[in-house]
Image (cartoon, rainbow, N blue to C red; front, side, top):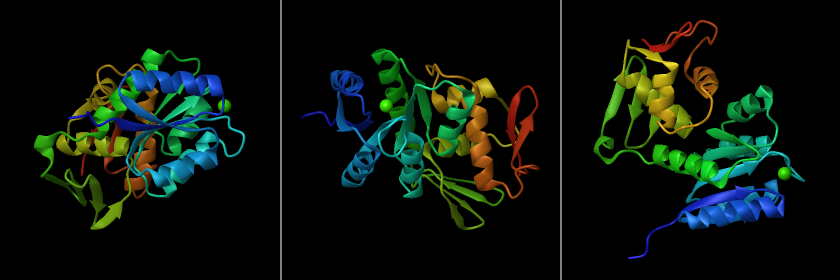
Length: 232
Ligand code: CA
């Protein structure tokens, strides 16, 4: 039986970088779908709902990659998103992640690094079989592992896959002090090569969705200089 190849959208306007990414994805058993403009990428995503991961370049001739990311999330899609950014300032990374990206890779990147990030994100997107049926309840929250959804007081809270994994980690460990390193290893994987700061950015975004007042969070408490704790 032929192996099912996971589809990866590659949005990059520079032909040589796009070809290089595409060749390396193919070599690693992915099925790349190419786009060179933001509009093309959005059209490809709606035509191929089975795309698992989208790689989004930031500087594009039409809509910038951050805006493409924002529109993908606004459409309700939970595809895994990795930003390919040439800009290295903290602000741009934060902007991308606040728009709903799961990860970012700074240019220039090696093919090994990029494929490792895609592999890691795909692993996070695939829920472990044994946990499929359970619901986890904590305070006003119900997390369905089968449907990968979160409800607060019976109302659906839209989460990205990364936010879902964070909620799962927190709700499975009520009252436990979790270090930022522990969170990074659990949610992003032990082989994740990015920065620890990605944890804080994602938690900031998650708080906006689940807390009533993000200045005085009730559910995700900050443990200064250490990490975070789930308490209801
Ligand atoms: Ca570009």
